[in-house]
Image 1 (tube, rainbow, N blue to C red):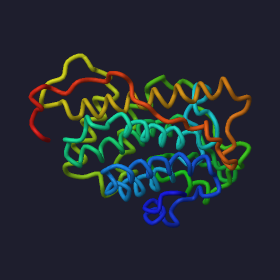
Image 2 (image 1 turned 90 degrees about the vertical axis):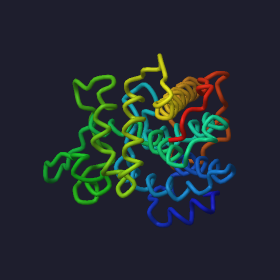
Image 3 (image 1 turned 180 degrees about the horizontal axis):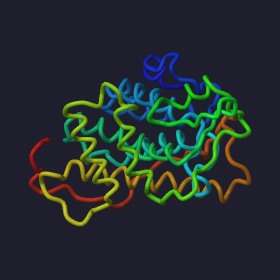
Image 4 (image 1 turned 180 degrees about the vertical axis):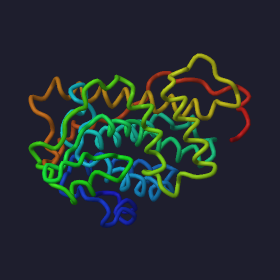
Length: 268
């Protein structure tokens, strides 16, 4: 990993050092935080990433549409955080620090509800993994789940059902961060995110709206880039192979996202 701060804080909790594709995606985020004025957020990002990695582990982000390969969910999540940070430049400079934490957490966990859409079965004891009962890595260690038959997608899942179920996992993954002011802000931003209502913005709810909209744009950008990679590559990336320079292109900014209220609104 290139980020010294990331290395210091993640320590031995990161189980993917032998998977350069996963490491590269998260290292990009840490490097972006270090280069800007958000270096103080690297420990926060490292802690929640280490926690989420235990739940998502090697699962894909979708069945066929995007990041549909091993570790795809983690790579997509890191890409979304990186893109969200790029999109938030200037706009969120005057936001209080808690909103930057909310942006990172929402971008990282925006698809965590996907964990309810897969069925992972211990082929020795017959138990089925329940994300609300513990992380996937613990289930792997305590049971027998062969690599060639890790999981199955549950039939009958809705296109956006995973977004609503994600709220159930937040307290478990975020742990001690999920309390008081942060809890109120991320729940508010999450609801704005999955309601996808961008029609009118009141002064008092501009902050969660802005965070939710940035994450929605970042999510779409990561999906578009992966679908482009699918069209130009005959095979999915090897998580143990070195990602080529073009694999994670520079994430630019759209010409227009939204405009803050002219009055600036109250600081929240």
